[in-house]
Image (cartoon, rainbow, N blue to C red):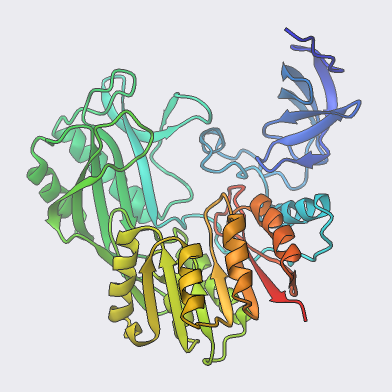
Length: 458
């Protein structure tokens, strides 16, 4: 085994000053230029620490004592939220959280030698209770069914009753469902032995409609007294308009299985975004922070400069949320998505909002459809991309730029892949023409969404 020549050794105790915050919200100290990552510390703090792990290039330590605290520290944040990863920035004042997210993008741009400006992060008030969807694990603790979360990087289960960043009504419904399952003596799932019944409780709530959906995710095909449980849920929570039973019998950390059965009420709930109505099922992808999503989409539309005469392509359209928002301001919107059910939902949502006349939705990968649309003579003025965390593929960037739109609007949920992709866009003749706008979709966490506008070089 190779010897690690670090300037610190395991179990060593030393005094350090925190100089930065990592993208995972860990404080960074340096000992002879050797980085030490320390949880629950903030820039400007002086702490006594004990080294817990060393590698060739960096190490980890834990706090023994705070010698000097940051003025940005939130005193006594609920430690369990930080331990589970629900709120890794819970110990940092909200104004400082917004600055952290702006700096995260600035630092990555600087590292990539991209001289671009970044606006202040668009925040929300209050920065709590915003999630309209909860997927909560269920486990047996000391013989009793509990809901909660796992500590980060572990299988240690922490029972919780208040989830801090979820819609408060969702927390109330979760507790009611938990107590009903206890009453019917429904066994919780045991991960180690892959037995028991209830694995997760999923709850969705419409921000404007106030409609609630409850999904009971089980390991078994049968859920004993399922109808009675569903009836009791609706009796105790009259706003629950949909109770579903999802079956996931696989040894996996994927939450939902393929089969979903209706137990009571209807299959979906509805909600609105910027006045548009959407139907949401158990498996639908729908933004979890509706307040910030409206701001995000409005900023993207404003920055795209839509006047009502443009042709737009939405390359990751999902159930049509952003496509339909843009269709109100454009002549024609073409949406493409790899998931067939999402496209079916997008078409239904277009009809529901009287926007079927100027929208077209197709199943498949965006590169293939861009080539087909180009062959058909379709010339987009704007291409909208809102990819998953892994960012865009090189082939998608090539396909998009070959269509030569005037603007490309990039909504990103991962600054690292955004910066990587911006370099390729630059090589393909596109440049960023407005400051990048970070939007805080997930307060109390390290996630950063942003809007970037690229234009074809003259």
